[in-house]
Image 1: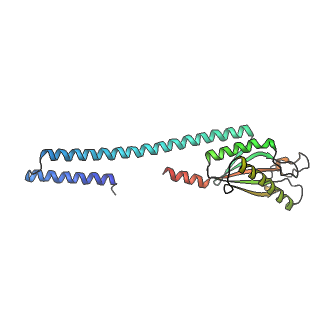
Image 2 (image 1 turned 135 degrees about the vertical axis):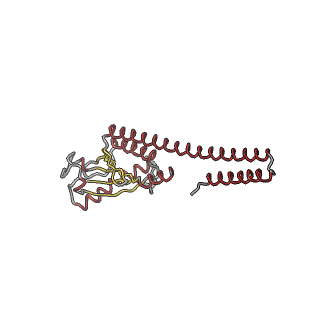
Image 3 (image 1 turned 30 degrees about the vertical axis):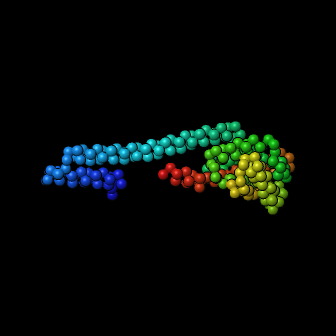
Length: 223
């Protein structure tokens, strides 16, 4: 199939061919008319070429911008890892941030020492994943009953959600909180439990970014 550019050129060439045919048969086409038609055809082709070049430049710039953005994100995440000892997992369109945000035994109060890492996390999400959904997962150590720990994990997740909503500028629709309690398959230090500092590795939150929809929107924007 012909593109609109090709069809336009063919139509112009056809018109020019008709004029040449008339010129050869009846000598009715003046030289200046022929020259005018040639100039019009030349200008049309040059205009189409300029439009095509403009579209290509726009696409190339979009690719360049996206590449630069990904490189900046990689540098930001590397700095985040090294500065706060954060580990990051990528699972089916999700980014899981295992952050050093921990809680005292039987407490859901957010510690002052843990606020800077949450501030940094919020800045990364706002800059590179605008519109993404963040889920705060709350965990406990295995001391106490499973039902109690499920409620405690929810309170911890809620505390972090509220902080990110206030200090990080997330709306209620952008951030959720869930509890996994003492889930044994998710314990950072299997079996470790308080009171005291024992089991503090398990008394934590995990921050999850659902960026699949954002990535799809970015991909659509680049096509």
